[in-house]
Each structure stands twice: as C-alpha cells, then as structure tokens.
Image (cartoon, rainbow, N blue to C red; front, side, top):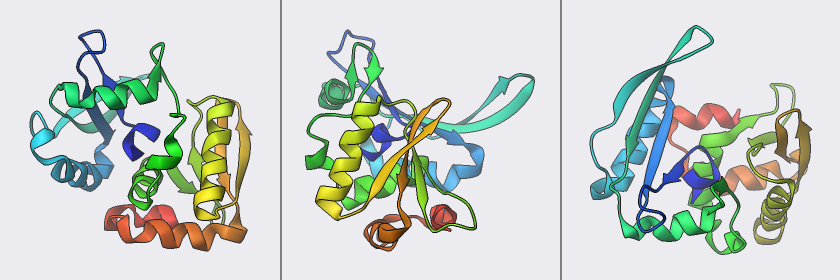
Length: 184
C-alpha cells in the first residue's frame, strides 16, 4: 500500500485480470530497492536490475524490479486505479498502517528545509480530493496535523511541525538506515 501511495505502480496487460507491481528508484537508493525486493520475497519475477534513462541529455541510473504477474494483485490495481489514473482508495483508512506510512514516506517524503521541523510528502499525482482524504486519515487515525501545499505540478502534503514528533515516532521503527536522512 505504501509503495502504491508513493512511487510504485501496478500494471496490467490482461485488461485487469492480472497485475504486477513495479518498483523503481534512483540507483542512489539501491539499499531501499534491495530491502523492498527482500520483503516481496517469492512474489518477485527476477533480481533487481540497473537501467539507464536519458532525460534532456542527462543520463540517470535507475534500479528496479517487478513482481510476478498475478490475479492476487488485482485487488491493488482495482483499489488504486480508476480509468488508468492513480487514485487514493476510499478505504485507505483501513490500510494506512505505520509500515504503510513509513514506506510511503521513504518513497515520497522529505524534510521541508534544514531550517524547519515540518516534513513534506509529494502527492502531486493525486487529485486535491484524494489528498484531502489522506490528510483527514492522518489526523483521525494518528493525530498528525497536515495541510495542502500548492505547487505548480499539483499539491503536496505539508506535515505540520506541531505534530511531527508523533509522525516520526510512528514511522521511525520501519525506516531503513539509508533512508533516515529523510527524517532530517
């Protein structure tokens, strides 16, 4: 769930009968992809691989893997995609566990700046309504205060400094060592 809220995505080639999950990050986050690969265990379709991607004549090194294609992932595809667009499921409150929060934050979280305690979660690919649903769940389930932060690409979730220690206490046990820099 945390990967699908973040940078992961589900793909289908069978009109929704089966899906696979794709995990990809910068090669600098190799340890994170290796950890995800280990956690996915026998659901993976092969070892993580390196690929190069060129954007505007700048070459990037990516590290990625896929899960097997399976009807078992149909549930996730149906929950997180509507008309081929990624959405936040209406029942996200059921699945937003501390581990889910931690994985989501490792994917899309960051410190606002070295001068602030506040944190940001990049959610620009979601609709304003979806982000408001996430903010409401953060408050009702965990007491974490957040607000929308407008960016030219969409909206981010701005985790307010007054409850950031609570948020960090929830996710810290699940943050892998190489991703602790995101906590500041």
